[in-house]
Each structure stands twice: as structure tokens, then as C-alpha cells.
Length: 81
Image (cartoon, rainbow, N blue to C red; front, side, top):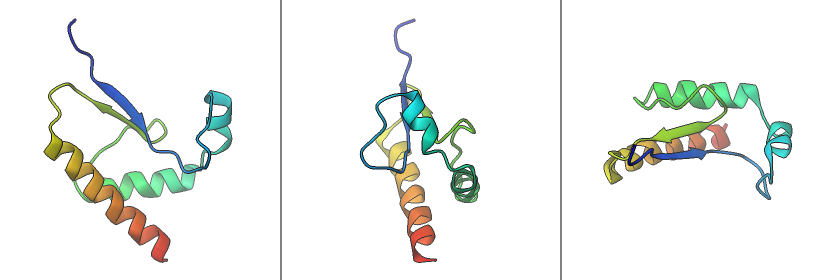
């Protein structure tokens, strides 16, 4: 194995959690489901496990831009309602 990729996770708190226990206290299943479904409607799929992203080494800047564009659009809709 030469490359594995990267893992990222969206979390909605300040400051960011320091460990898994702290991360568990901020989980919001309904919000996560809304975000996942809204992203799917925009052609982007993220892991069902929390708001986790797994990116392979072949992911491009355009792949990241597609995700972020969809994510920002979804967040904009959520905060405007």
C-alpha cells in the first residue's frame, strides 16, 4: 500500500471536540440525515457514519469543489429557514 487517502468530518460546534466522547455529545441525527439527503439530491454522497468523508488519493480539486459547493448550498438553505 502506498497511499490510503484522507478522512474528514463536518461537525457543528465551537470549539471542536477533543475526543470521541466530546464528539458524541454534539451528534444531531436529524440534522445529519437532512444534510445527507440534501447532498444526495445534489449528486454528492458522504458516509452514513456521522458526517464523515473518505477521499481517495485520486480525488481532484474539482471533486472537493463539487462537495463544498453542494455543502454550502445546503447550509445556506438550513440557516435561511
